[in-house]
Image (tube, rainbow, N blue to C red):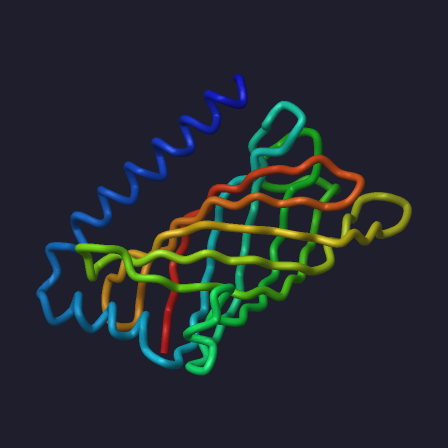
Length: 194
């Protein structure tokens, strides 16, 4: 399958999920929707997120498991910062093998710190957007010794606010490590905020 078809399929799936779940979120009562948006745009909050997804590794853009868990906290004094208003920490397991989807002896374990920028979307209170920049260390297992590499990731996503405390995050990311080809990820996950 060509990279253009993979990207087109990813964008179609992303758009379909966004509109399918966004339509359901738009049917919430006005107060629930408004409360969800206020929670997302309030001066401080903490988000716990779990995002299973798939990498599309190069070469060949083969799908591999990408399981991510993390926590982020917004800071009111960063609201006007153009790069981000929420600091994040996450752990990601990725199948780095040449076969299988979920697990092989070759795994990538990444711990990353990041900054996330939350922003409102016009004409809706049920859906908002975000960008995230992360950097950290990826450790590759399955070899005679653990290989550590610098990790850099950028992501664009949408938050569908289900209530004042829960939302569904949809994310598409671009990831790079030195001495390795770049790869993309597509994830959907659940977030609890307080």
